[in-house]
Picture 1 (spheres, rainbow, N blue to C red):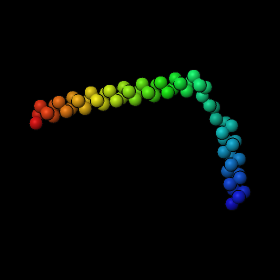
Picture 2 (tube, rainbow, N blue to C red):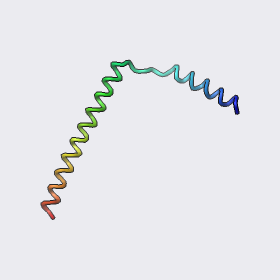
Picture 3 (cartoon, rainbow, N blue to C red):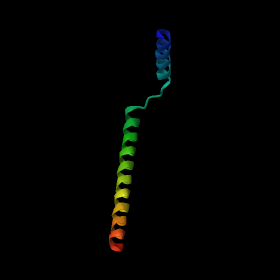
Picture 4 (spheres, one colour):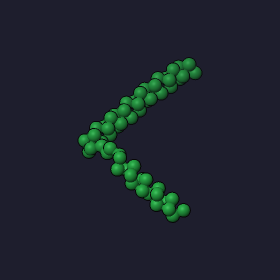
Amino acid sequence: MIGRLKAFGQDVVREMQKVSWPTREQLRESTVVVVVTCLLLAAFTWIVDTAITAVLRFIF
């Protein structure tokens, strides 16, 4: 059991060395893209919700 845990730990270290980490600038750019996309989706959802609510109020 201890040998398997040790092997697992070594495998984790080896795999983490293969990871290509983003630079600070790449991370910032990706974060901006995610935040802007979330804001756009929230605005779209609000517009659609408002429109559907207005239509349903008109019908009922």
